[in-house]
Length: 125
Image (tube, rainbow, N blue to C red; front, side, top):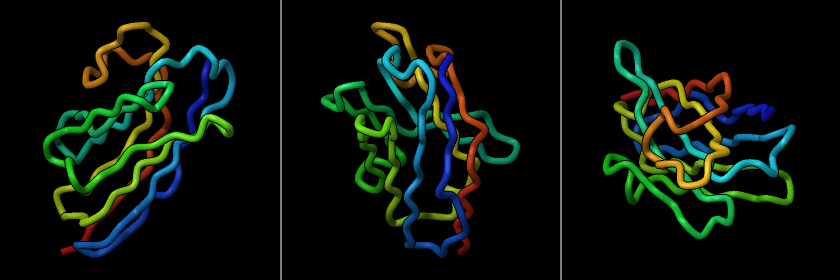
């Protein structure tokens, strides 16, 4: 089992920044891919960004390219999502997810095996 705990959400103004953290515990050696998804009220959960275990490969949704950066520190089993130039449409609950499947498709939520509880990010206009 893998446990994921997100932190770093909050309230910022348009143009501001937030840094989300996802701390993993348990069988972290089994994780191949870690991703961030978000869900706004009344909408489906959508892919935001993902990173491979080595950090060599990263993936981003078109809506966040150039503004968000995903990174990881394997020394403490933490994945980060740096969010800059935030917009009101970025407001959502952000979830961290981990996949222990070799060849998992990073943008597909069904390919992830473990999920955190989520952290709220609110961007005011």
